[in-house]
Length: 307
Image (cartoon, rainbow, N blue to C red; front, side, top):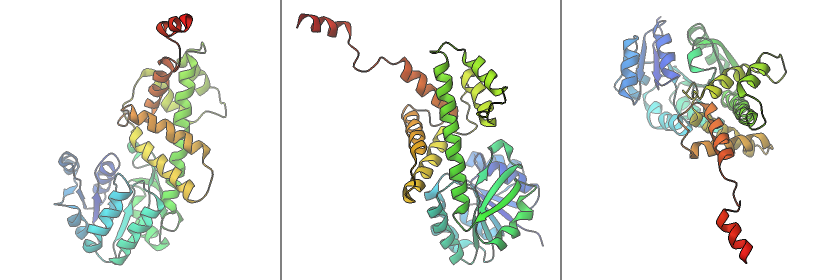
């Protein structure tokens, strides 16, 4: 029996997923942006008139939405009344575990199964992603043959609903820390008398324990001033903020998470949310170039001399 797939959310992650799934099975899709629907249709995805229509058609429904409110709102207001009984909802969005559990309740009330299975991997690595799945083991095994070999290298069950989201948020918290400290180190190079390019090249090729694939990717882009988004800073800020909230809810100290959140928020206030995460480097360089607060101007010094 042929499995019919639905994808709601055809952005950077969902659009790529829909195209690869469409090559394996009939796939229907919807997005609020008509241009995304059109692009997916050119690759074989069948357009639907709305999210509810996709839900009615799908045996396996993939969600790829911006945040927790989008997922829970869709689940409670649309999916609960339109899902096929016995279908499986695979939510690859990055949300918080409480949001995942709320969505699961709405989906399960409709007689379907819900998995929070966010992506570990960049958008352009679709096909080689790891999906960290939280939910019923039988539902995971049901979708594994479909997802592995199309959008994912591996589907790993990490626990009950909500666990997938925890793993993803903690992963992205580490991403945020590496992103911020890479930008900080590169910003310090010049004032300290070292060419940032020399620093990045030397460290990247050194075999030092500090080196990661993310450093190797970020450092050259930062140095080149290339902030074309592979992963937008606004999305990282959201993910890190959710990780910080998770720590607070569980009473766990989050010193690094708090610092990363401050860096991300300051960069967003400067209008960098749509740029690549490495654009936080601009925050460091702009603050370093700003006059020191409280420094006396010539007028202030003159006034002080005549007092």
